[in-house]
Length: 89
Picture 1 (cartoon, rainbow, N blue to C red):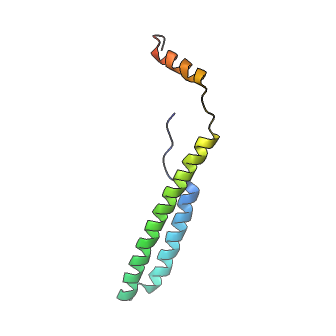
Picture 2: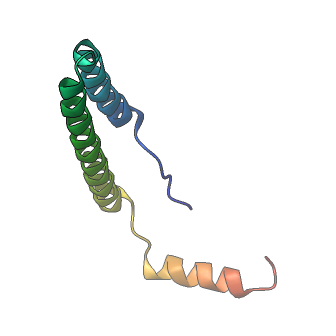
């Protein structure tokens, strides 16, 4: 079974809302070059923080998944190996 990789829609919406709010607030200040430079810096910092938060949330989700997934018994593993090695499959 493959791992689903991607971004949780809820997390993506939160990150999008934060970035959207920063952009919306920044458009007011874009007329001044000094303000544009400040906005660029803030936007880059937000982007970096957003990436860190997403990475942390994905790692936490993997840890929770490991805890809640049922573990295979040694008998189940042996059966899978035998089935995989048999000529019937």
